Amino acid sequence: MGYDLSEDSIQRGWAEVREARLSNVTFEVADVAELEPDQPFDAVFAFDTIHDQAKPAAVLRGAHDALVPGGTFFMMDLALSSKLEDNIANPYARWTYSSSTLHCMTVSLAEGGAGLGGAWGWQTAKRMLAEAGFGEVVAHRPAPGSERNMIYVTHRPS
Image (cartoon, rainbow, N blue to C red):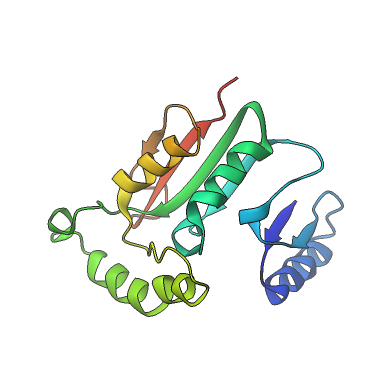
């Protein structure tokens, strides 16, 4: 099951499903900050998206609550520190800060949101995952095949 606020994104997903002739994939236009699935999931994935959300804390809590006890949450997001001074030597930092200001934060703030942005950093990510109720977070940096991303894996406690 895939969720997105954008009807265009959902339509593109359906087109790819048809092209690949898959029968076990579905999509739905939905606000994941208000996610209440009919049945809990074994795993939830968030790819480079939490920092764009108007309500990132609600999205993380919704992901937690949508999991079965012991279920896995997998998140890929930008590999930066929450501290500006720690990002000076990062070759992707300038790109992240500029694109975040022009897109990520703007998208969230336009909805009256938190304006977290792409430079929210691993410290804030780990803190917010804990606040959402997740257990220990294992972070992998860089993500395989993508130096500018980081992978976080955590679980809903049993």
